[in-house]
Image (cartoon, rainbow, N blue to C red; front, side, top):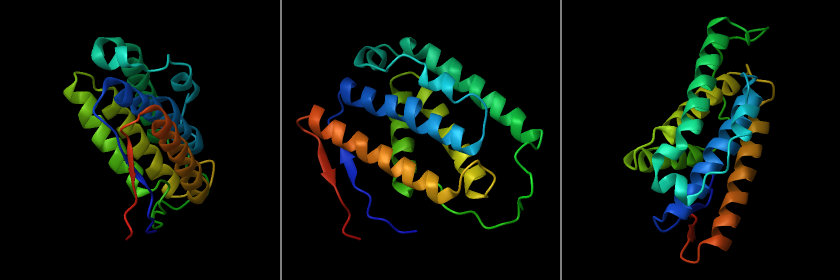
Length: 176
């Protein structure tokens, strides 16, 4: 599925990075885990909002890292137990559960936050990829198209927030 999803470029400030990391961890990852039927997405939503102070001192993201590590461990156990396989074929062709641009955003953010000293965004990226695989194979709680729409809407809301909060933000659309 080819889209022309807008891409945001923001100045590399702690505040902009925090807004993106907060969205990735507390919103996108939680939605993906929930819609994949994987354990405890609410744990991520209950985490404190990520602020510029968290990005400036990555040790402040310890709770986020711990929650993501525990969530991934639970998801791995859940999948190894075969829980989501009721009536679905693992051999079926996957359907995109997330716009490709969001994977790009998550990967870029994972690298940026890792360079600052925290694996939090990389762990969230791994969880998103895991959940997208489950949903894309038809093993989630909802159809891949529902997740695709939900995550695209979430990303567009983030773009609007960054556009408003970051005076130097630019939104780019590839004319395709």
